[in-house]
Image (cartoon, rainbow, N blue to C red; front, side, top):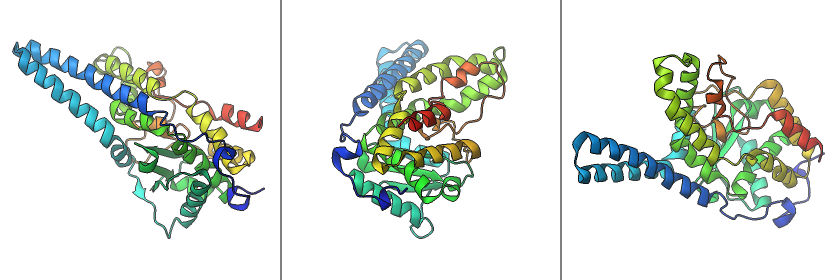
Length: 301
């Protein structure tokens, strides 16, 4: 009943990882270019209507599109860290975290990610970045405090599998493109369909929510569950971790940005909508399958 730290090391295809194929790169490039072009076009049309000068409108559209593409590509990960007030993990205070990530990463052939901690009692974790070599792994203090070593190892193996399969880029750039609209969407839902706020926010946040759904593979978390347990060779550890997370709660309240990066967390960090009005709108920003389904699938292994 040991994880990878106490088992025979496994490498290559034996881990269940097929190798990095930059799976999310084409999707991410398409999302960034399409979104930047669409927003640039809309802004350009507004500028054309306001000025009547086609050249000025074209320049404005190009500048806006380039700015959106650059910000989404290079600034989404730093923005996500800032939104949840994540701080660099301390090698002394968080020695167990560093040791487990180092061991798992060596077995999976994954570069060491930057490690951050969010001071929050909720049990959750996420991985993001532009590539496996520029990846960042974030855990909550609650996760570190409440999971035992084997359970924490299973969760970290899940997160490292995102890096190994290289599915983090599209989900990361989606923070800057679409995730930032999650809080306005929840505000619009709370305000009700007849309010001026909802009238202004619903169309934009709904489109952003659809974009987020297109950005994230609907089976992303289940896939990471499976490849993660192939790495540790001990499915009950992840089952126990997910059950503990289910009981203790996965809500992450630190900062105001949890909604913007909700799709990156291992489990949903958001509470249910305060009202049923326009609940479908906030549902567009929920990309996680229920923990019950994931636990049941792991038990079948």
